[in-house]
Structure formats: C-alpha cells, structure tokens
Length: 405
Image 1 (tube, rainbow, N blue to C red):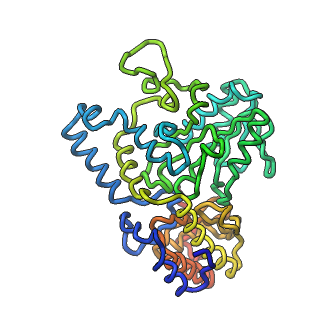
Image 2 (image 1 turned 30 degrees about the vertical axis):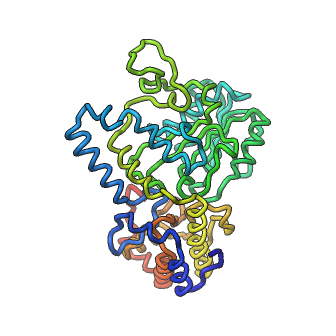
Image 3 (image 1 turned 90 degrees about the vertical axis):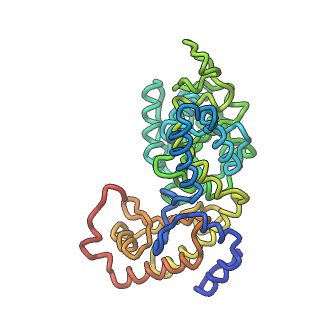
C-alpha cells in the first residue's frame, strides 16, 4: 500500500483494498463534488446531523432546562474531550472542549508564562496569524517581551513560552514534538502546541512525547461543523500547577455553590470559562463517531498516499510544491504554487473540485482520508492539468476575489 500510484488503474486498485473506503458512506457529500477542503472545514457527517437534530428538537425542544441533567449537558464538554483524547494521544480527563483556538491559546500561554524561565512569548513569523496576534497581545498585557522567530530559528532553548503548530498551515510540514519537548524542558521553555491542522490527519502522542499544553480546532479534520468549539489539552500533573488567566464560572471547582471567590477545578476543567455551546457540542459528538475503530496512523498513511499522487503529478505539470515529499513528514494537506493560484482554485470549483487558496500564490489540497479516494484525487489532477494547459484560469470570472478564499 506504500507504493507510488502512477495510473488510474493503480488508483482504483488501491481503493479496492482501502480499509477506510467504507467510511465515505458516513458523510453527506453532494453528488458531483470532490471535496479537498477538509483541512479548512470538514463536511457534514450523518451522525453529526442526527445528533444535532436530537439536541435541538428533543433535548432542548422537549427536555428544555431539564436537559442540563437529564441529557447530561453539564458533562458534555468533558465527554467530547475524552472522545478526542485518543486522536491526540492524551489520557481521559486531559482534554476538554471549550471556546475557540484563539481564546484557548491565550489561556494556555498566559497560564504557562509564570512558569517559564523568562517572561517571553515566542511565535514563528510564518505561523498562522491568530497565533501571532495572541502572542503579541499576551506579551503586551502581561508586560513581557514578544519575539517573532525567523525561519530556521526554533526557540526551544530560549526559556520563554513558545506557541507552535504541529503541522504548518502553509506547507503541511510536521514538527517532531518529542524532540522539541526534550529541548524545551532543558531550557525552561514551555511549548503551547496548536493542533488545528494535525488532529484527525496525523498520529499524535502528546502524553508519550512529553507535551504539556495544546489547543486545537474541531471544524477541520474532525468535521465538527462551522464555528464548532475548540479544545484544550493539559497534561494532568502539569495542569495542577496552572492558573487560567480567564477564570470563569464553569472552571470553578463547585460552580453551583455560587462562591464569590474562585477555586479552580481539578485538571484541565479549570480552563473552561463560560457555558458550553450545547448544539455545536452535540454535532461534534456525532461527528467524532466516524473515527471509532480507526487508528491515527491509518489516517496518516492514506493521506500520505493521496498526497503522493498530487505531488508526483504536480511535478509533471511544472508546479512547485512547498510540502515535504517524505509523507512521514507531511500532514493531511499539500500546498502547490502558481502565480494565478486564486483563479486556478476558482476554475477547479466550477468543475466541482473544492480546494482553497492562501496568499500570495498557494493552492491547498486537503486530503481527508475518511471520505476521499485515490481515484477522485487522480481525477482532480486530470482536471488541474487541463485547466493549466488551456489557461482557462485567465477568464475574467475567475479573477473576482471573494471575502473568503
């Protein structure tokens, strides 16, 4: 299954033996659409729709306020966190679903700052923008220093707090978490990992690799839906040393005691602030059912095969790629460069191939392994080759920029 797919027949042969092939039936993907944007917004699963409908009509519509107890709403954030835990290599009780990635990065980095050797917040200057903004805002608020790390400078030995993505949103390159954590601990650096482009696409072993803090989103590979809440991971022993800079009601040890003073809840629960978004949480709970019985290594293995198809055929078209050729070092998406990248993406969309664009010239193909086939990806590259050969992307309608790219 590791051999390179160099023809449509080989793609079909791979699909016939693919143990994940049957998972596509769990998704509601419109006829005629090839969906290569699971790294940005995962598609709807049938179980997510059913679970959200139950929460809306039965639990809220009929159970009303009683459902905080009768439907278990009050514990749902932790239960969904426990469902995410195996996908990131965490133990039960170390993950809770809450807020957004931006808010959670702020909470974790702010909590870690007093424990770092220096009052310094670091972030890569090619990191996802929200991570950079959070680093700057936190440093300003806390009276610390912010340092933007240029390419090639890792920051593990600097002794501050470092916000870093496990998988680059631009290139898809994977960071060696275990090696980074070893170097960071030696220097008194605390790393807050951003798992947004990793969870559900690559194998993560946070506990075994010594990771202490992480946050990630659920609307990408985890298919939680638009605006689905994010999650926090805090290693059990390390969490007890931390104080959230945003202490809220449901992060209290006994929220229904209504104490005027704050006592943090045990473990990761202390990073919960406000009331959980039950409808979104319910949809997410349903979406995660698609991962039952699937190992993260199997997901990454298939994403690697699909990515190899894209890279080897793109090379034949003369397209440059910023993604690693070695599939073991590459996440679930592949990034190609073309000077008219935005227009190319629009031309593909007109043919039913949904992908995305990142300025200035990057075309990204998300290769979600639960619902894509090798034959589909081969067909996408046929369409891309035709668009480039005919220069159809030069047509005026493909030049109009939308708000969301």
